[in-house]
Every structure is written in structure tokens, then in C-alpha cells.
Length: 296
Ligand SMILES: NC(=O)c1ccc[n+]([C@@H]2O[C@H](COP(=O)([O-])OP(=O)(O)OC[C@H]3O[C@@H](n4cnc5c(N)ncnc54)[C@H](OP(=O)(O)O)[C@@H]3O)[C@@H](O)[C@H]2O)c1
Image 1 (tube, rainbow, N blue to C red):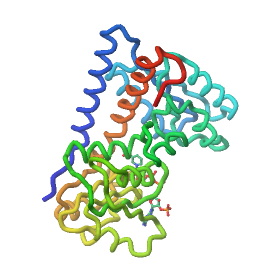
Image 2: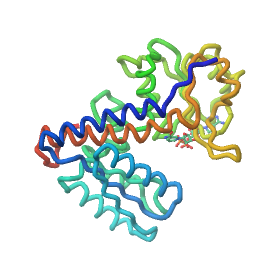
Image 3: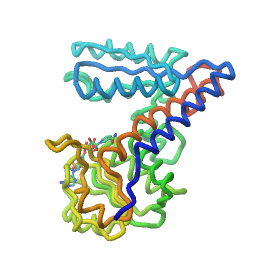
């Protein structure tokens, strides 16, 4: 039976670490970190995510400024709000909750966010920094996966890692993080997608298998190498509750370590958002005294 990688517990540890850093800074007379959250429209899942983020910020001592906008908000109004958040000295991070209502251009909005406040790591400057190995904000879910590898001492160095999924927010950045030089990285990465000819064969070759497809129970035990580490990023709502991309019952017997769904990668995303916000805050207050051009 595989080691169950407890993302809930690990995320809690990370959140406590962020809270401790904030408390230390505030005790030293610094202002607390600020996170601006922009939510446009009434998407129920987004409303829940934003509420969870507000609560997590409160617990860590981060001030959240939540801007709830109607679905009818115009692109110009949204860009103007982003501009205001960029300029505010008490805002260290800006999070634009996606998806945006139809008719709004998410890419243009992400591009408008000051990269030094881009705590979601979606701005092309931060994506570019990741791709050429410069410091910058990492997208929260892939960074959460890397943190789990580190905290469970599971090193993919020199091993074959297979990432199933090539989205901009999970698969692609995860592939880049795994293949870059350094501890808990240095993997030989194969990236699979819906046009991959023999997915089962690629998965079976993986020492480390990362699943980010959004297809509940798709990867079965016969597609997994004996002793593989399986990190399941997928979360799908099914009649039987939240399910990952792996058929957990079967795969957990064959793998040496596996993340459950829920309670695996999911809780790490918010923990990394807080960590990125605290980093943005430290950059701002330590290096610039609050000015706009903080180093990343
Ligand atoms: N906090 C978290 O834990 C967190 C955060 C983000 C996402 N997620 C979850 O992670 C999953 C992926 O999210 P996402 O945003 O990356 O999804 P996405 O944008 O829909 O991407 C899914 C990827 O899976 C690939 N794929 C789909 N069916 C496939 C198949 N049969 N064989 C091989 N590849 C296949 C797609 O290939 P093509 O590119 O060819 O279409 C695509 O690259 C979802 O379940 C999502 O809910 C969790």
C-alpha cells in the first residue's frame, strides 16, 4: 500500500509558516500584507474559492481587499480596477479570479497586472521567468506539487516523470519545474495530452506520474508502474463526491506514494497563494519601502 501524501496537513504547516512570517513583520512595526481579489460575475464555484481565500488570508494575518463586480462589468472598468490595485501601496498581491464572464478578455487583464504583484504567477513575464530559470512568482498549483515532493523527500532527479495535461496553469508549468536543474527537480519529463498516441504506455514508463486531466478515475492500476509516485492534480465533481484522475483504489496498491483527492494537491494551492503574497510583501517592504517597482 502506498504512502498517502497528506496535502491537508502539509498545507496547514505552510500556512502556519506564512502566518509566523507575517506576525514577525507586524511585530517589527511593518504594515500587514495585502491581497486584492477581483471577482467578476456570479459563478458559484468562484464565489466559494474567493470565500476560502478570504478566510485563509484572515488566518494568516493578510488583509484581503475583495472587489466583487457584476457580470456586466466592462473590460475598461476591469482594467481600471487592476490599475488602481497596481498603484496601491497597501496591495502586495493581485488575484483575478478566473474564469471571467463571457465577453471579457482574461489574457489582457492578466497582462495588466504588475508582475511584482502577480501572486498567481500567470503574467507572461513570470511565465517567461520560469521558462528561463529566473526568479519570479510560480503558479500556485504546480508550486504546491513541488512543495509536496520536497516535504515528503520524493526526488524525481534523474528519473522519468510523466505529466498528463498541458494547460497553462498546471501541466505546462509543472513540466518546466520538474525539468529545471536543482533539488527535487532534474527529472526527464514527458508531457502527454489528448493527442498522445499511447497514453497507457507513457504512464507505465513513469517513475513519477503527474495527472492533470480532469477525467475522474481515468488512470487505472494497469497504467501505473510498480512503485511509482503518483501525484493527482485532477479534481472532478462526481455523484460519488470529488474524484481525482487516478482510480485511487487500484492505483494506491501499486504506487509507492500517492496524493488522495480530496486532501492531496487541492489544499496546497491556497497555501502557495499565501506564500506568494507574503513573498511579494517582503519584497516590497524590505527593498522598496512600499514603492511600485519591487524586485521579484
Ligand atoms: N487546486 C487544485 O488542486 C487544482 C488547480 C487547477 C486545476 N485542478 C484540476 O486539475 C485538472 C486539470 O486542470 P486544467 O485546468 O489543467 O485542465 P484543462 O485546461 O482542461 O487541461 C486538461 C489537459 O488534460 C489533457 N487531457 C484531457 N483528456 C485527456 C486524455 N484522454 N488523455 C490525455 N490527456 C488528456 C488535455 O489535453 P489537450 O491539451 O490535448 O486538450 C489538457 O492538456 C482538473 O481536474 C482541475 O479541476 C486542480
